[in-house]
Length: 213
Image (cartoon, rainbow, N blue to C red; front, side, top):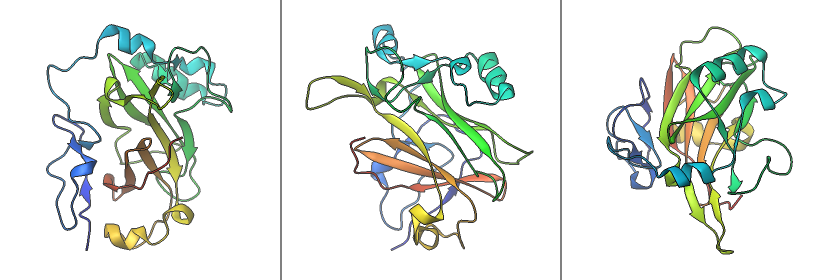
């Protein structure tokens, strides 16, 4: 069985559900993600308010130039975990990551940028890189999930993954090897999509996620 790998030239219009991916199937055209986007879909204001968010300037580790870029876009960073609680989760801010997303030895940063009820993965390249600096715009409301304790949580989470975590999945994805890291975009406990910058384009294939945190 093989899994098709497609380029993400631009993230527009319909986002295909990763759960629909079948062995030997093709994802469709240019838009992918965990939820289906619709032109008229706008989450209720109360749901958007319920999601805990941080301002870029409050994340001390972020490069100043990246903070400026995020502020100019009007970004806030949605925090994974229980809604309605102030501050970041234990262990520091969530949905703020860094890694070698373009090539080995180059440090890049990525955050979830929430604006207008949707979040986009925004990347700050350490050096000029051909891959787009943003991808996977999806509605925040889709990721609100009620746990067994009846508490509502924002459940979208990004993380950096590399060869040591991905094992033999390069061959399955049709790539020769993982020479650097990629971005794993999770709907925690449900599904995930793995984005890998290669040849100036983002490639995507199903990730693995059965974790609850």
